Length: 423
Ligand code: SAH
Ligand code: SF4
Ligand code: F3S
Image 1: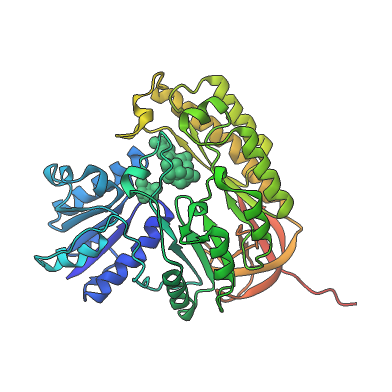
Image 2: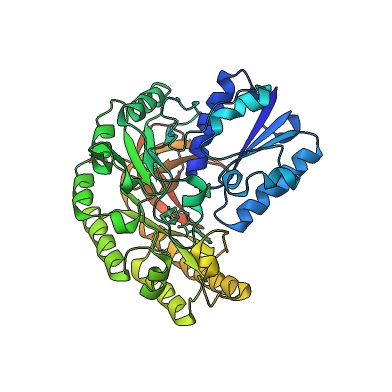
């Protein structure tokens, strides 16, 4: 039995793919690199926007047309359920808490076991990847119910992995050569296991031998408090990287979105992050065209991009999601207008992203080499704030190289090994 695993959606799905890979391996199912070579195809899907669903459905149909057995697993599986089978898109459908059933389905077992709605896959060890960086979900689900978002319905309620299990997974990865660990969750700041909170986890993980760098994604701006930022400052392994999704700069829209902060609250947190970590790399998510968003609301968001000067932003046009409150709201913005706003905001942020990239030129610091550069020569490397740069040098992944940022090509910062001045 040869299986092709295809992943859509967020980093949590990519991390889940390592767990599914392990389940396949343990069951003696071989993974292949392309769908055409497979007997069966497993899709880890995303439902956050319609586009993500359309891509997965299209691919699933093609694979079924070629006679493959198709399992649609993950968020779209949970939300669209057996209708996917009825509509000829899938042979089997599984939610994000049902990955353990995958080998059984592929091997034709009768007993697939029960679903645990509070699944954390804590006993599994992720299948190793080549490379020096790995990601682990420390919590699953979401209880925030932002009114546009499908994740709480797709992933279920919040639950955190027991710390001992996390440590076991991290030690396993470190043994395989991993040096950088990313801790993932829809809101890692909501981590809660007995009396352990997120800051405790960061401190504990930093104490694990072999963990040289720690990153985390995503943090809900509402839950980032000064105490956590202070404790983060005491962790030398921590990357100075903060992804803080703003979504909108209009307080009225933030209220309708149920985000739980105002623009002022948000601004205070960004200021605190930047004063604590002067080299912080700050990124955000922006959602335009939310129901009721006026041109004035949108202009506020455009202005906020200038004000906060994000290093990077992920920008989206509102997509109606079944089961969410926003779907029922009055004053839906016409699709064309959503697209117009999206284009405008992308244009603005592109200028800022480029400007911010140039801002690093002249800086000297130790870079962490991660992989060969995708195009041409040199290596990909990371600054302490996780900003990716292209290093014109031969080095191995995992190496630390003292370098100087010398220029920018597009949005990429170019670095060269720093030459010691001879006196
Ligand atoms: N948990 C993260 C976000 C996860 S979803 C957080 O709260 O910050 C990633 C991003 O997708 C969101 O930040 C939002 O900008 C976008 N998104 C979510 N639902 C969407 C929808 N219905 N339409 C368009 N974009 C959406
Ligand atoms: Fe969605 Fe909000 Fe949860 Fe993020 S915090 S996953 S946007 S409901
Ligand atoms: Fe998509 Fe599910 Fe992640 S909806 S964004 S894959 S949690």
